[in-house]
Amino acid sequence: MVPRFEILREKKLVGRRMKMSFAENRTSELWKSFIPERKIIINSIGNDLYSVQVYGIHFDFKVFNPAEVFEKWATIEVKDFNSIPDKIESLIIPEGLYAVFIHKGPASEGHKSFSYIFGEWLPDSGYEIDTRPHFEILGSKYKNDQPDSEEEIWIPVKKVLYK
Figure 1: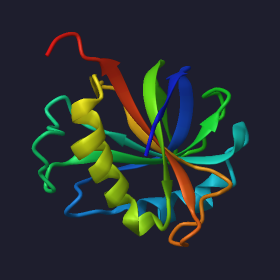
Figure 2: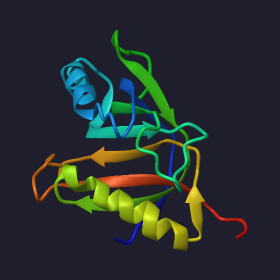
Figure 3: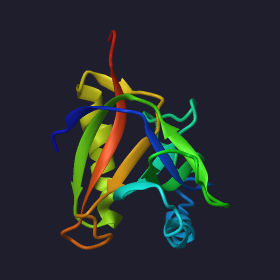
Figure 4: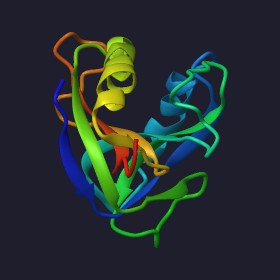
């Protein structure tokens, strides 16, 4: 897996969020609560869905703790926040540099891609994790747990200033 690097411009997203951990993963519940609401969002940009993770400043990517809690969002991009339906919240992803990886295969095997990114690629890359949200784009090639599914994994990075 070789990433491409992109400077993401600020994104405005709307959706639903839940606190969870990897040990108590509530992703399915989150998406089931958001998908029916998606139809009433009138100012969306495109059809891509964004699965966003907001990790606290103390989240340790070097020592994985599956019980550590973070915030997960099920979202879609919008032009502005002028027409947000009730029960829907807004999230801004600030501009910044991202390493973008393509996960090919069932979503249930995504852990293999993340294990490679954080365990193999990142330590030798000359980059470190930045504090902005992480996200996956579930675009037209995303087919959930099908073997030919594809999704983009966006990891916020910054150059290591010293080693």
